[in-house]
Image (cartoon, rainbow, N blue to C red; front, side, top):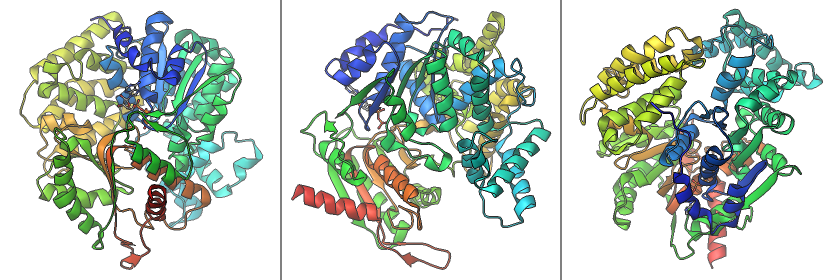
Length: 604
Ligand SMILES: Nc1ncnc2c1ncn2[C@@H]1O[C@H](COP(=O)(O)OP(=O)(O)OP(=O)(O)O)[C@@H](O)[C@H]1O
C-alpha cells in the first residue's frame, strides 16, 4: 500500500489565498514564519496548505514535516483537513499532539542513547495511576483535606523547569509534593504526560548531538494553536528552530490563550513573532463571522484589533436573554424556542450547525437531559464525557464512521486509517510488518461494514482483534488502552452510552444530525452558524474571587465562545447560581453586562 504524503491538490486550493496578502505571504515564506491572527482568519487553512506545499516542493522523503498541536481534537481536525487535500500520516508526515511527538520522535529514539534518567522501557502512567500517586503523596505530606489539586502540581512542574533554581522552592509544599509524586511514579517504572515534555526539553537542551539528528529527520516543524503551549514546549521549539536549524511555521492567537491554568502563556507566541530571524505575518480578514459578531467580540475582549469581515453585507443576530428559573429554564428555552427558530431561519441549516457552549461540564448534564427528553440527538465534548479523546479512541471512532457508510464516500479515508493504525506501533515497522498490519485492518473493517448496528459489539471486536494485541506489550500505550476500556464500559449495559449505534459513535466528532454540546474550552478551533452560550452568570463566568490573571483568562474564554459563531449568538443567564447552601443571586456575568452596554452604545 503506498503511503502518500505528497499531493498536488493543494495547488487548486492555493488559489483561495491569492486575494489575501497575509495568507499569501505565509504561504510563500521561505524561512521561519509565525502567523498571528484573530479568529476565523484562516490560520489553520493557511497552515494546512503550507504543509502540503512544503511536502511537495521543499522536503524529500524520508525527511519530513512534523505538525504538532496541543490537543487531540486539534490534531484530528488537522488530519481531516490534510486528508481533504489528499495528504495523510506517513513516515515523513507526523500530525499529532506535542506529547505524541515528544514520546515518538524525541524520547523513544534518543533518551536511552543520551543516558536520560527515565525508566526503561518508557511506560506511560494511566490517569488512574497518576491520580492515585498524587493523592497518596499530597495526603502523606500535608494530611487529608490538603488544599492542592493535581493540576496545581502540573502547572508548577511545567513552569519551574530548573530544579536547582531558587524559585523551585517558591511554593515549598508544591515542590515537595512534586518531588514525592515523581519519586512514586519512578518506583513504579512510570512517567506521565508532563514528563514527556519535561524530559524532551532536557534532552534537546543538554545534548547538542540530538539537534542535528532531529533536524535530519524533521527539517520542518509546524505548530498550530501556539498560544496553548507552555514554557517547556516553547523551549524545545526555540532550541530546535534557532539552534538546531529546523524550519518553523507556527500559527496562533494570543487572545485565544485559555490554558493559563495549565501553564500555557500567549506571550510566548508574541515573543517568537518579535524575533529578527522570524517573518511575522498578521491576518486581518475574518471569513467566519458576520461583521456585527466581529465587532461584538472585540468589544467583549476590550481590545480594538481592527479585524474586518470578509463579506460586510452579512447580517447577524446577537441576543441577550434572562431566564430567571435557572439552568433548567434556560434549557427549556433552548429546546422550545431557540433550536426551532434557528432551524427555520436559514434553509438547509441542520442541527449540527448549532452549538450550546458552557463553562462547567455539570451544566452540560442539564442540557443533555433536556435535549434527550425533547428527542434531539447531540454530541457532547467535555470532561464529563465517558472516555477521553486520545489517539486510539479517536481512531476507533473514525473506524466506526468508515464502517457505518464512510467507505462509500471515502470519509474518512481507509488509507488514512491504516497509516494511523501503523503509527501506533512503537518503533519503525518493517515493510513486511506494515503490510501485515494494513491487511489485518482492511479485512477487519471490510467485514464490519454495516449501515445499521450497535457500537458495543464493534468496539469489543476491534479491541479483541487489533487493539488489545497491539497494546498488551507496549507500556507507552497504557493510558490509551485504559481509555479504550472506558469506551467499552460506557457502551456496555448500564453505561452512559448504552445502545449507541455505530453511526453515532463515528459521528461523535460532528454530524449534521446532532446538536453540539460542549465546554467553551472544547469549542476552540470549531465554527457553527448559531452559538448559544448558557449559564452566563456571575460566579461561573467569571468564577468568584478570580485573580487579575484569571479574570483576563475568563474574558478570553468568553471571547473564544463568541467568535465560534457565523450568524447568531445567544447569551443566556439567570442572575443566580446554585451553591452549596442554596441559590445565590450574584447577577448576570459582568462580561455579558458590558457587552450589551457597549454594543448598544456602538450601534446607537
Ligand atoms: N482565503 C480564504 N478564502 C475563503 N475562505 C477562507 C479563506 N481562509 C479561510 N477561509 C475559511 O474561513 C473559515 C475559518 O478558517 P480557519 O478555521 O482556518 O480559521 P482559524 O484562523 O484557524 O480560526 P480559529 O482561530 O477561530 O480557530 C473556514 O471556514 C475557512 O475555510
